[in-house]
Image (tube, rainbow, N blue to C red; front, side, top):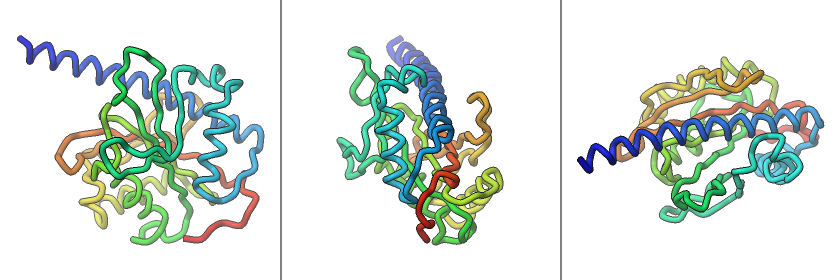
Amino acid sequence: MTDKLDARGFIHNAKTYKAEFKRLLCGVVYCYKMMIKENAELINDENDIRDKLIIEYLNNDDVRPLAGLMEFTFNKEVDEYKTKGRTDIKIEIRNPFRSTAAYYIFECKRLNKINTLGISGLNAKYIKEGIYRFVSKLYSTNCKINAMIGFIVEEMDIHSNIKNINVLSKTKFIEEAKIIQEICKENFIHDFDFHYKSIHNDCDNNEFTLYHLMFDMSGLLVMEEKRV
């Protein structure tokens, strides 16, 4: 009986986390759209773009209620409790009854059109220094669901580039990606075409989900593109 109750509880939590996470992603996309609307000026640097997103939008008390993010707190460059990982963005939920281990992680990576199918381009880094951090358990997947944000720093066909990342994951970075389901398009965020989902195994063969948001920042950059 106990096992059955535990199993049902896990299924309930998984459904709850998924619904909650989708609300979170919708709010983050709202903030991205606000950045575009306000023509925010950015330096072509991953940390600069991430910091601008967090400080001026995600944690901005004037923006958060509009974006539906009042229950979330965003922290940058946080050390993982049980690993040597240092997360780009750690999202905690303001709920006194919530386990402190039940948080989400966003990993951010720049993307451009250079060497898109090579082992040294930014697509490769998206896998080796992004997806692999979840597969290797350098980053926790306590809720079995996390996300990556691709900062597009050069005009490109984003859907085609997702296909390139999938090709790399299935050919040159098989162990790093451990794909169960390749990156596929999702459609739950209104008026935003560039959100996706993939499913992976971690190094202990535990299944987890990654959502992928592709934010085109190319029109906001005020400095020449940083090369790979």
